[in-house]
Length: 154
Image 1 (cartoon, rainbow, N blue to C red):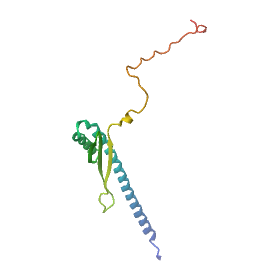
Image 2: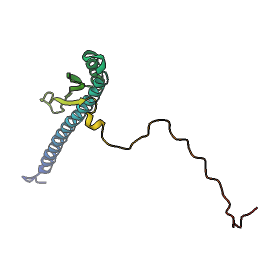
Image 3: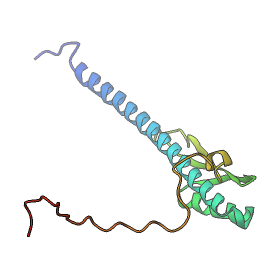
Image 4: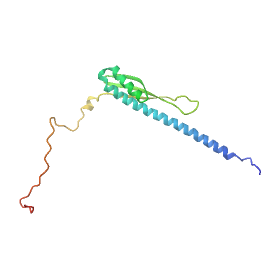
């Protein structure tokens, strides 16, 4: 049995292909994690801004405290909470990790949101006109009426 110069080349190519596929898989996982972190940050910012706007009547401190609790429950960190009139402006950060060896965290995913009352132009937009006062009473079901020349006389 003689060995040719090309014996074992298929094993080397297969190992290289497996290595490339694993690298592509890890990069895909990191990219997916970054996208998921961005979505989590956006959702946390939306809910935190709504919570802050809902508690705006109690002052900035309690409103931003509520926003902080909501953001922390969603796995985010509140970076900014302030008010512009009645509008709550919120920024949250979510840490995004990586699976690639030798690389630390990618960095935080940032979500920003604004919530508050609707502007007057939107609040007074034309729509269906509703009548003030009590609702009308429902009609009674229609009764069966006999016509004068009906063959259904009793």
